Image (cartoon, rainbow, N blue to C red):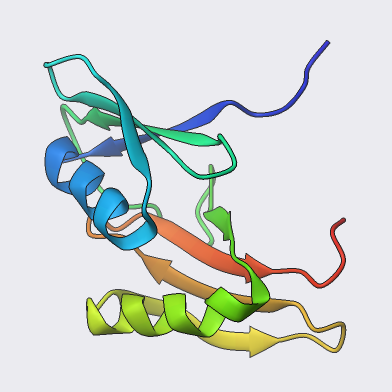
Length: 127
């Protein structure tokens, strides 16, 4: 029986730099380093990203291209604005600035240092 998604893999031109960026900005913990450019970083809820050194044509995904569009990171309501500000101080590329839906769902889309699209999300009521 499937119990959830353990991790999502992200290719990176510089996997160490991207790993360090996630640790610094989001407080992820490095839980695996194979010594060859592959890392696992874990969020507080146990979800993980596998960051792998890219070989070949390493280019970011565009928002409307085929394939994975973005990854969403859950944020608490009281931490949402603080995290957005932290990302802006780091001069991330903003894809879509903060938006709040009529139901109070807050989102903020940005690119990490490798060009991958992520977004922060706060949902007052989980799906």
